Image (cartoon, rainbow, N blue to C red; front, side):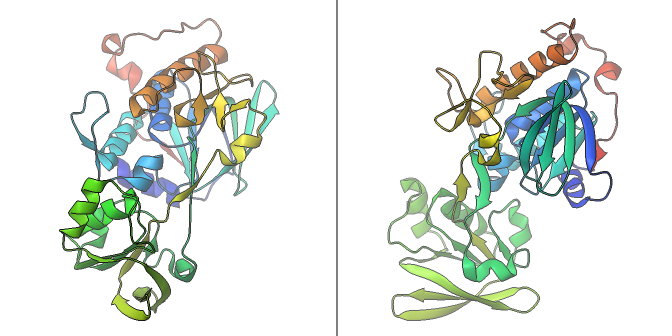
Length: 352
């Protein structure tokens, strides 16, 4: 079973206990959160990861799963989705519970630990918490006329290009995501039309030049005004000036951006700095045994890189391990010196 299939099965499984007890709760399933899950397992901690998106990967999965990333240590270039798959595979041997499609809405003290509540009623009881939610809540800005077809041809990101092979695809938007997805889909879709309500694009100049020399049909100063179909989306109406066009559309990707900010996390009593959670050199927040990593945390000199988030995740988890088990060493053993059977105790993750 591949990590991607396993993650899908996790997000679709909502039966079972509404309360989960773990050593460490991680808010956010982006790269930093997934690496924190692995490292917590390596330190022998049980883990639950909660994220509002229906699949792991955070911003990488939502915005650029097919783009090559060049600033991840050890990878001359790696696709976003491949990085996420590798992170899932790395954490796979440990007892990790993924609670996807759920938004963490409140954090309350419970004994010496915390109770984390989600919008669907799920509760996670944890000794420590790592907030890896970043600054993107990833609540998509929606196209009103497309809402009735959400999940039936309308989507707000493209996790995998091959699901659109042979389809007529309409992409709406003028930023990097819209242009990148239109270019990436052009070789495999039957047709791709990019609709943008302005005459200029916010995407990188090089990508825009590629767009206008590609097979993508580009409609600027235009808007999608209606969606039609039966069980699934079949066609859309686009108004361009005084003209209304009807386009075949087996899929519509509304790449209109996502709302930003910490969301409910901002109301948890954490000290904030420029809409980010303030931490010390151990990634600790002002709340006992609550840590923050990734782009949603703030400290002097921080550089917003995925590789930096990985380091922050390791720092936070090691300090959390000591806080939860006083007397343990802060610095773990070298992984190269660890017996494989000691590092790989559980063959399958827990599905929730």
